[in-house]
Length: 199
Picture (spheres, rainbow, N blue to C red):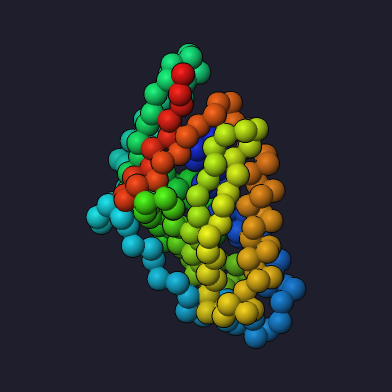
């Protein structure tokens, strides 16, 4: 979970926790499971709003729009801000580069009711492809993640539960470190995510 403000902090924090979980699993799990984690795996997610454009301009657009929205909300105004998949994925990519993380080919795809993140993680000299599908609740003291599906490498479902458990725990722990100042509503539609605050 990368902390830019709360919204980016939630999304990016989730991915950071995954890397730590996978590193631990590489050490703990058998050679067979480790080999399956490091081979093949999920394909990059399919964007809901057309082709992704991951670049600095979209990253800057995300940050500018979020800062303006956050400033208005802090001043007591209601409102909403909408981000495209390209803006979200570009901000995630910028963060990964700025922090020199082991993430590569990060993609964020938004569909009706759920978000999807895919990417490659370099862990202990191996490259692992991972995919997470779910959503966030952005109210209360901390964000809460609802994970619908996790895929890692070629690990089959019956062997994946320990991996899922570790990733879910890492996500939960990371989100407890992010405090929410307001009750945000999050709406996920094809190709875009809208964060809103009511009066």
